[in-house]
Length: 417
Ligand SMILES: Nc1ncnc2c1ncn2[C@@H]1O[C@H](COP(=O)(O)OP(=O)(O)O)[C@@H](O)[C@H]1O
Ligand SMILES: O=C(O)[C@@H](O)C(=O)COP(=O)(O)O
Image (cartoon, rainbow, N blue to C red; front, side):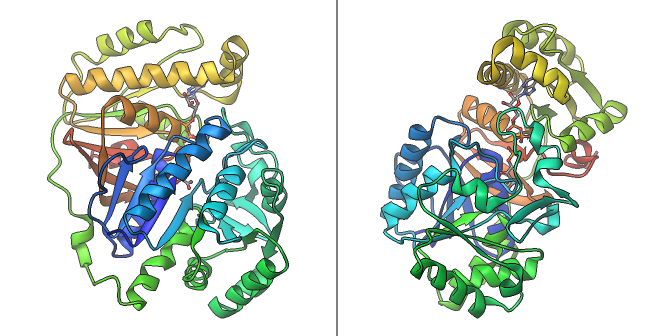
């Protein structure tokens, strides 16, 4: 019976959250899509949805179905995981999904906190920073699907909900868990449905997690989940599990990287890979045809597959992304690239690839769905927020890298190359 039931709005986000919980000593399994049968045995079950950019009604319906399955399995607390850069549009989907969950759980209130200080995401006076830049000056203003043009999360979330949004500011968070809990209770009693909670450090996140122990619903990035294992331990529900929480079968076999993220970090990682691995950069704009791009990639990879990774990227800088979107429309451009990379993944696995890194949340969703993966067991961390996973029933090792995560050498380092 899971202690914590999680609903993640994309697949990389789900592994990021699972990774945090495993590091905190919980066993965690990521299931792909709304569970249809019995849930796997784990302290935390993370349902990975591809709902971040889905139509609002679909995102809400799937999230509620996931919530119902988790509650039916006995989950004691629900966590709604979204991006540490609050990826969403004014239409949603963070607000509408959170609204639906608040209503389903009858809790009237939830905190909202995307901070992830280890990866440079902090929240101060309700404003989200990426490193030293405000969110809207961090490169996220150019995201292909969810451009973030306002760093004030109170405002951003207010535009997505008919509830009201308050703030638990830094000065309160600094005082620790009891003060944070009092502030959240005060906001709830004054009619606020949400509180954006400031956090600059892991200590802040641990205090927020402790303060939220009695909450039915927590919403945020993986950072705010850091404090949750201790709550279950303090309640006598979670035994000490040590390293057993992240053990996976041994990894071996041909290696590949597929990149569909156009984030600054991923573009940098592709730049590094150019000098250290066989790297193919697909020119989707010149040839917007999934079948032709698949044929090109397979032809190129034919004599290169082996223990040293091959890297195949559709990623492009903002002006090229904008040009493809102008030609095809935003959603069709994204769907074409996702279809292309999913087909390449399927063909590479058929040709023997056993270890695969996928860069990008939407991209990972497309690839994992195509590969027929039902669940991911979480293994050791490669870089903050990105673990190796073991995909069942396919027996592949997969690392789903959030677009913005990972060091510049991530695509080599993941394979020890
Ligand atoms: N060259 C390109 N032109 C237009 N869109 C692209 C291109 N390359 C990738 N995309 C799309 O951009 C989106 C990137 O989103 P995602 O995979 O979630 O990355 P991130 O993790 O950085 O958010 C995907 O829908 C992908 O298909
Ligand atoms: O919280 C995060 O930043 C990640 O877990 C995440 O959700 C990233 O999504 P993508 O950048 O779309 O991979």
